Length: 65
Image (tube, rainbow, N blue to C red; front, side):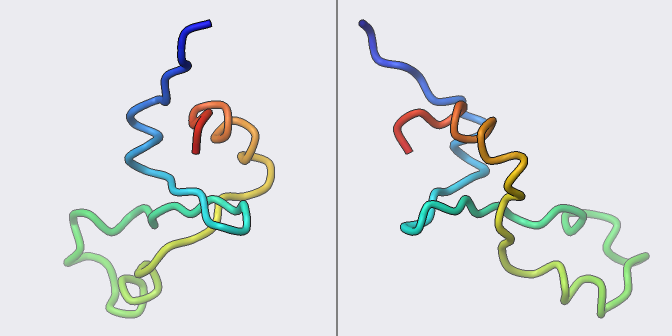
């Protein structure tokens, strides 16, 4: 069997943590930031964990992660 390929878009967006959870970046913080409040932009910092219902599809896109 040949090696399976990772989806390159998913590989750029998601990382598997040591405990098995998957981290992702926050959305809605790239542009048009002048119309967003300072509080809103501050709360969009950092990373979040993927919801459990999405975990199986992300794992399928990253077979060796």
